[in-house]
Image 1 (cartoon, rainbow, N blue to C red):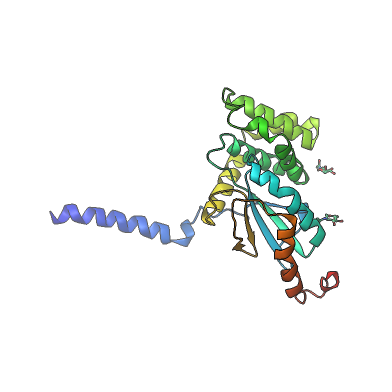
Image 2 (cartoon, helix red, strand yellow; image 1 turned 45 degrees about the vertical axis):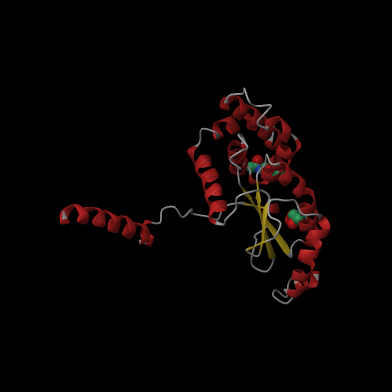
Length: 230
Ligand SMILES: *[C@@H]1O[C@H](CO)[C@@H](O)[C@H](O)[C@H]1NC(C)=O
Ligand SMILES: *[C@@H]1O[C@H](CO)[C@@H](O)[C@H](O)[C@H]1NC(C)=O
């Protein structure tokens, strides 16, 4: 009786000790997830916006033009990182997020071009129109979109990207990163690490101005090189 009770306890102890041992924390990725807009080195002296985007989500699509406008207006006082976050009820969203990682790997300058192409042609990847399409057909179609962003000579490379386990790993990390931040919809926005209210809905240009204007004014002294933009 005592023995049978002891064994599960030992197993439990082993389980917990391996989870608590930081050297076994292999689930930590080697770099931060996401795509920095315009290749800007974020954080340091700027206000950081993190956007969790599902490339196949209409609210995400609608949230992009005002966000892009405001980031360009306030750059370099404001930086942007987009994290791909596939919503589980959009059947092709994971492949679209993976496609963004493929584009980013082939030429990081093309990532946002592909994101905008997904927004433009989003409807053809919705659940209804793709109900009878195979996964391979969808990957081929997304590769064409990728080649449109990167240049036609990249078509084969893009298709091969779907066989590359590192792009699968990167897309999984994106998903896990969003989950670890409590993201469960799109678009979700964090500013300097804090979740903005109204998550899951697009913000208008005026709403963004109202959020960012006071922050830009308040952190003016942090970098003398930048205070000049104020
Ligand atoms: C993007 O980079 C170019 C060249 O470095 C710069 O002129 C432009 O202002 C940048 N745009 C944004 C939004 O950061
Ligand atoms: C990546 O894309 C940019 C912009 O389209 C282009 O200027 C650059 O030459 C490309 N780099 C490579 C290695 O193809």
